[in-house]
Structure formats: structure tokens, C-alpha cells
Amino acid sequence: MGLTARIRTRDGWAVSHAVVTVTDMTGRQVVRAEADAEGAVRDATALAPGAYTVIVTAVGYAPAAASALVTASGRAEVGTVTLARQGGAELPPPGLWTVDPAHSAVGAVAQHLGISSVRGRFTEFAASVEITPDDVTKSRVGAVIRAASIDTGNGMRDTHLRSADFLDVEAHPEITYRSTGVSVAGPDRWTVHGDLSLRGIVRPVDLDLAYLGTGADPWGGTRAAFRATADLHREDFALTYNQVVQAGIAAIGTTLRVELDIQAVQGESLPQA
Image 1: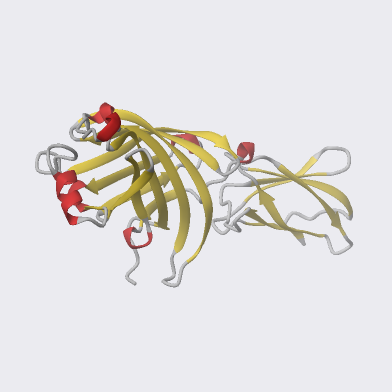
Image 2 (image 1 turned 30 degrees about the vertical axis):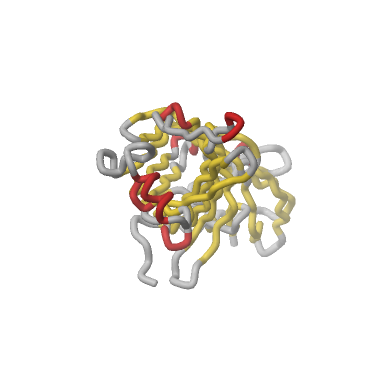
């Protein structure tokens, strides 16, 4: 006897702070119950046979409505109710997520001689993402990259990139990013506003972030995948070294394209693989 329901996100994860309200055909509220940590709702209130309206609400999600028919048994089995993020934009379940460097990539692309691209990546970095439950725009992102870990596949070029002409890794061994806010850019897309510190110079940089989904991993953890991009202007960070070749063509373009492919694991630490 009573009400049972399960509240889930589009990815199938529990919405533990959801509230379920049941009204009869006259609009009178007959049940109000909260979901538990597993997103399950169980209320033993006896309901008279008939039709009812079930409304599910949760902070950060668009409300959802469903119908329930109570039989002579007095039970209302609503089943699974799926909630979408407010505005249609999705993010992983709230909490702290730790980026897994072994399954992530931090790369950059520079124009070379105006006709091709040179790609590089940083092989040593650490980062975390915190999704806030009540207001996702207050979620936070932080990252630290070891500047000397730059790898373009060419040892001579990498040595030059580590020098004072470019990254100046002796004086500035770390590149850091700290978010200052998050805003909705569309379904499953976000703009992360933050400050990038490079060569000791701090400039605001926005990341165009796409959330790719969440799922279980082979080590018993929960993983979320993201892809993010940003454009950096070299002169903003005093990366002004350039070589001019024939016909006045600059060897390196003025803009760097940053490309991030990220897997993050739910929790404060990575599982032991």
C-alpha cells in the first residue's frame, strides 16, 4: 500500500534530492515524499482507488509530471521518472570528480608556415571537477600542468619550447587553470570561465565544454567524459618569439588551439587499476 517511484537523470543516475508530490483529481495534495540516496521514493500513505497526478521536482532540474492509477490494492507504482537538467543542459551527478591522466589528453595545435599544423601535448597534469548540487553554475574546475612535459614528437623543437623563448619552464614550471564560473551554452554544452596562468602571466580564458556522458568503469568506479576547447593568443602570454621566413611568412601562427579530452572519476582519488 502507498507510493513507490524511482527518480533518475537521463544517464540513469539517482536524483537523491528529488521531491514527489501526489495530487488527486481535484488538485488536493495527498502525498509529499522525498527520494532517498538511491533516488527511490517509498511512502506508506493509503490512497483511495482512482487517478492521481504525480509531480517530481529537484533543484537544478526541470519538473516532470506523470499519471498514476491506484487500484483496490491502494498501491501507486509510478515506476521510473526521468528528470532533465534545467534548460536541457546536462552534467554528471553532483560531487567531486578527479581527472584520470592515463585516459585523458591535454593538447595544443599551432599553425605552421600558414599551411599546416603542429600538434603537441602535455603528458603530466592533474585536475579536478566539482559539480555543485543546488546551482551548477557554481561548479568548479582546477588544473595544474607540468610545463616541461610538452611533447610534439620532435626533441629539438620540444627543447626550444621549454626555453625562455616560449614556456620558460625553469622560471615557471607550472601552468594552472582555475575556474571562476560556469554558464549554460546549450544542451550538454557549457562555458567554463576561468583564469589561466602561463609564464607567470594570468589571463581570463573561457573553455567551450561538452559533456559526453557518464558510465561505470571496469574498476568499480563511475566515469564522466568531457571535451573542451579554447583559443589562446600568444601575445597575451608574452609568447612573442617568432621567426619570419621567405615572403614575410611567420613560422608560427598567432593563435593556439587548446584541445582537452577528459575522463574524470567520481571521488577524491583514482581507483587502483
